[in-house]
Length: 173
Length: 403
Image (cartoon, rainbow over all chains, first blue to last red; front, side):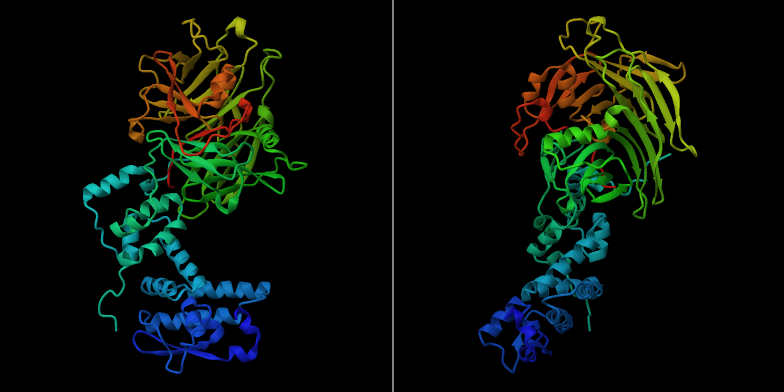
């Protein structure tokens, strides 16, 4: 089934999915197969004209995921170096999203079992977190500090060196 | 229409937060656990690892894995260089490690901060190995190529860190120095030849290097100390001071070790060790420290307060580190003491039997002259079963910093 893209007939088969807020989307079967959940539904003949309902994925992230899967399914096997690089560029642009969308993609890709997208979103989140102080990360992700000042002090003390990143650089001739 | 903040990152499922945490460097992961309770619960904890640490490679030669052992808590964490790269540590300073790698048998040098994954590649053309070596020969070959590196890195907002570096090369017969500014590397500005000591056959060529506040120091076995002002347009070595080594006639043929260390007020210290360790002759201690007084241009004996409340950390390879209470290490280290990691001291003191004990560190009390096993490590990485002291991994001190 993974090699379905090689067969022009198969890739024309369209799978319909319905977002939690009732919007309908279509994608080639090969694209849907990139989602573990959709693949199982298709294998179990649950993919009918009414569409597969995805109760926890809203239309906005679902549109992105359909995009992602369609792009990747079209280029799944036997990539040339140029195609692989193009796909990398696509991924890099694809994941340039705000933190709200990133959150939705993280959760939806995880729920739908789209491994490549899951990795991409996890990596993007890690890149956003890297090198920041806890406070900067709270700002980035809109998180409220729910530690007591005492707890916070305790936490920082455990590995003080990790929190000393705003110190001015030492003089170097 | 989004009427309120739609997403709640605190509520991101724990397994997702956990897998994000796995992609972070150690220091980012520790900071990430301080963001909120749910993230703290989801991200794998690191043990409390206060400074200072000892870095112990898994194997001799280039190693693909290192144990970082926190001396105050005796907790450890494993560090695997990114991409499975094999490295040999040749120096450490302020959270950074100087490492030697073999790329297609070509010896390369980099400065890395293992806690942030920051990295500076130093352009080098030291040597190329003819063929792949077994670990023991690799260790010996690399040791004679680049024995030790003293350096400093100044973090900058962009990725181009500035650095100053001095490397002991060719088995201690040369000291090369260089620098990098604003992403432009200038290694190596000069190479100083270290003459053979006049003491005869028993005296090996030895040199130690240290960096402090823009200046590089190196000392020959005859006691001559040179300084290179790395801020000068074209830095070159100038004579700095001379400390005649303590002479013990009947031991003159034995090995003698010395270490340069700068306290944080900039005073240069030299610590001598000698090869015998009977400890009976009080006039001839096994170790002694001299402090250079730039005003009187003399090497003075230490005052009763010894190192002025500081402690020196001397590793097998890295430049000696001066630490004191305010660095957060006061609770575990005694002031006015010198701490060693064990291997070279065993070799230098010719007490090879002692090397068979667990990995640990020596401590030398400057005031009393007492040498003791203050610290023994009980960490979760099994010590390699090796029959010869030369096979012991050389360890370094590291004072972790996340910049």
